[in-house]
Length: 53
Image 1 (cartoon, rainbow, N blue to C red):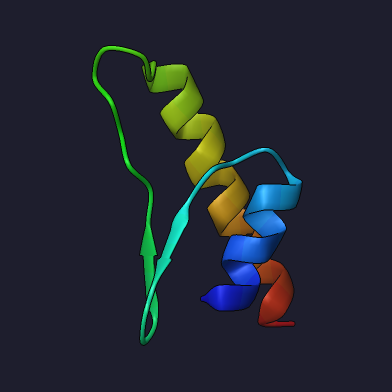
Image 2: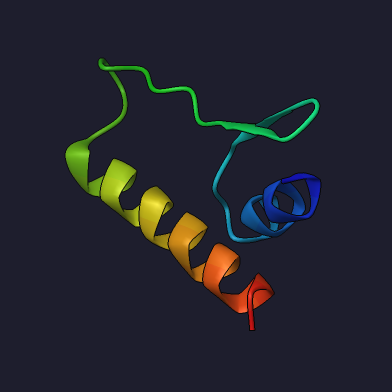
């Protein structure tokens, strides 16, 4: 997940890496919209799919 986190940062998604293999996306209900959440998870899906080719 460390490589995934690096790629997400490059895409403007701000995740957190937790050893040994954790990915955490902190959500603030006051400032994070459903659209932003959907976009971030879409980026996670794209990055994971590109690494499994």
